[in-house]
Length: 110
Image (cartoon, rainbow, N blue to C red):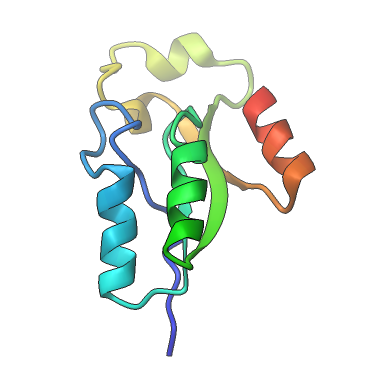
């Protein structure tokens, strides 16, 4: 039975994760995972490195991003007294995935 992680952060998720993209891909090879998704917090800096390293090792790369959002224009209320070092306490997050090349371009624009 194969398994795909759909919520993985790399060292590009500042102060949240420490795994490098090559180390992530090596672990996928070690555990014989056919695919994996990279969903860093608020950025897509590692997507190109991730995409090409995954293809190099015959792993299907799923491109995504975990974006922050605030409901009801209450940003000041949501982050009042919250630490910016832990974004999960100040903001809500949403996982977005690219279905194709156009989707990955749209994620980069966001």
